[in-house]
Length: 240
Image 1: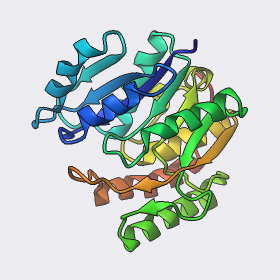
Image 2: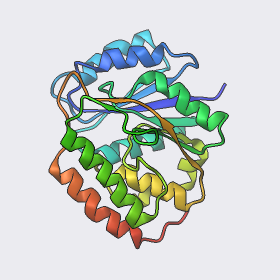
Image 3: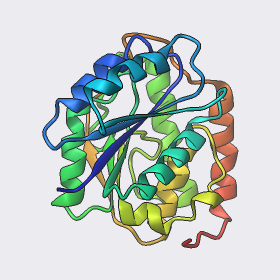
Image 4: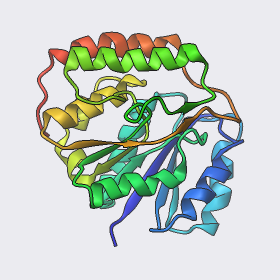
C-alpha cells in the first residue's frame, strides 16, 4: 500500500486539532498526519502529543519556535516526508475549511486520474465558497486571475492550499530555491511544478470558512504574493 502523509501546519488551533486528526485517521486508506506547530501558546502541540499514543506510527509532530511562515512549515514537512519514503504528500488546513473526506478525491486524481499534482479548487466549478465575506471572495478570485495573467499558469485556483503531490514532484523540485513564505508559497509551488513539466489537475471542492479559532490572513501575506509573482515570472526554474 502506498504511504500517504497529510501535513497540517498549526498556530493556535486547539479548537480544531483533535477533531481534524480524528477525522483523517478515520478515513479509508490509512493516512498518516504530520502536524507542524509554530510554538502555539494555546496548547495545540500538547493536544497532538496526547493523541499520539492512540495512533502510534501514524500521528507525528514537529514543534518549531515562533511563527516561521506557512511556506517554511510545508517545506519542513516535505523534507520529513521524503526522508521517510512517503508516496503521496498532502497540504491541508487544520480548521475544516478543507473537508478531510476530499483527501480521497485528491488521491484518486493522482493514483487513477494521471495527475502529478491534484489541487482542491474553489473555482473550477463556479465559486464554491461558504461563509466568506463577499470582499474576500472577490480578492481571492482576482488574485488567481492576476497570477494566471502574469505567470501564464493555467489554473483557476492558483492560491489553493489543499493539494496532493506525488513523491516524484517534491523530489524533482529544488526546495531550497523556494522564496515565498506566506500564501504566495502556494503559487510558487504550483508554478514550479508546471514549469518542470508535471501535470496539475484541479478537483472541485467546497471551501468552508472556519467556524472555530481565528484566521491567520494579513495584508503582508498579500503584499508578498503580489510582488513575489512578478519576481517569479523572471526567475529560471530548474530541477534539483
